[in-house]
Image 1 (cartoon, rainbow, N blue to C red):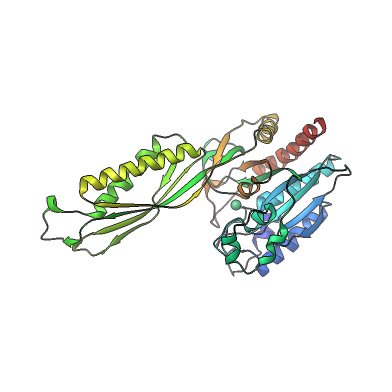
Image 2: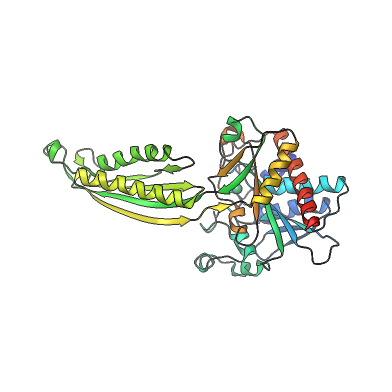
Length: 388
Ligand SMILES: [Zn+2]
């Protein structure tokens, strides 16, 4: 917790925490965390994508590597735990294993990814995608540091990736639990929805003859939560609404909104999007409006590895705690790593489910549980690795 405070003070902005990809603040953060890695007996280096790596080599020939970590970059005016908690708990778990005198049958590597939030170039996962070798050409074209492609690691060398992260939601707090086991990361559809009507005089056009785009949009906005709440695990959000011409005495001729739909299951997410589309079409037809429905971005859901997830569950249960499984509505480095190896995640309760905010807060006792569970997890993975 003291390390979280110390790291949280390293910022590129005065008075608030902001640490972006390849910034001088990140260089200082890597130096500080690198020193802590050294203290834990890890061999430290930085790769071509500014990812900080701390390695514990096994004496076993031809052994694979278990990767642990999270990201060290932040959003603007961030909290201290989103990202760093996953790196610092991994270092602490390594220390705990050293104290237990554990010898591992595989190499272990703790990584602090350089870019997950995507603040610098509006392109998330630069660090983890560089390591996984899955950087898109379009993303690479946007950035100055082209050498980050050299951070690519050979496929087949990692036996898995495990990440501890704050929940960024209220479910663990609601269930009074320190930690939860993540089943997967939700897929996401982002769309732009436009209703075109006819602008007209607010005083002269009778109600029955109007084609009010905003009233159609409003009806749709209200329909979104009713459609979402009938489908388990689905979340759907209208985050932005633009109205034109936007004058008090003119009937709105145009209304455009954003729609964000997420679910752990891609088929169910796409079905929900189709159902919302049908709803919007019906509203537009009834109100004499034209509907323009434009998909903007889609990302597929990521499933956490069954075996690794079961090991996390077992380790939580062995500490006498209830095992709560939950899906992540937010994206994580684990999503990028899932392209090259099995992934698993452990969530830590955070106060009020608040994140991306200086008010982000975790309990010391919960972090202690996460460190112990992670150390137990590594030992259990080792036992399994020995057996095969
Ligand atoms: Zn994060």
